[in-house]
Amino acid sequence: GHVLTTDGQHVIRCNHFRVSEHRLPPTIYHYSVSVFKYLRNMDVSEVDLTKESDGDRLCTGLLKTIWDRQAEWHKNDTGAPVGVSYDGKSTMYTSSKLEFMSALDSRHREEGRWKEDIECQGQQFLVVLTAVGSVQKSTPVSTSSGTLQKLKQEYVQGLDIALLGFAR
Image (cartoon, rainbow, N blue to C red):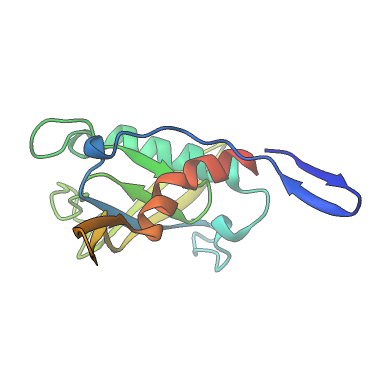
């Protein structure tokens, strides 16, 4: 979107997409992403590159590399593709829970956390995915005509982060 100024007022132009609610998963899963650079002495830097203003492209490329390596994350229990929404920074949502404990390499295994070393552009990085929790799609709301399902705001934000990352 673009920010326009008219008579000192800010107007934000937004995109809206029609989504069939019945096609949305009942739960989405929230993950925190951290990326650290290895220093020359192979110590891990304390600076999380997902917090840096110019880290979007690098972090997205590293996360895509991890995703491509983990074929078991690509499909859910029913064989349907797993949807991923990543903001290019520290927030990722998926339509199915990622199984971190199934890794063959014990370096990656830790309850609720995935760690992987990746080389990119001649440098070594440590990428850490941490399970934050899950978000249910809706909550029941009582009305005079019965009970309705109200879509949760956090769920909508989880679906929207890919667009927000693109708009940056």
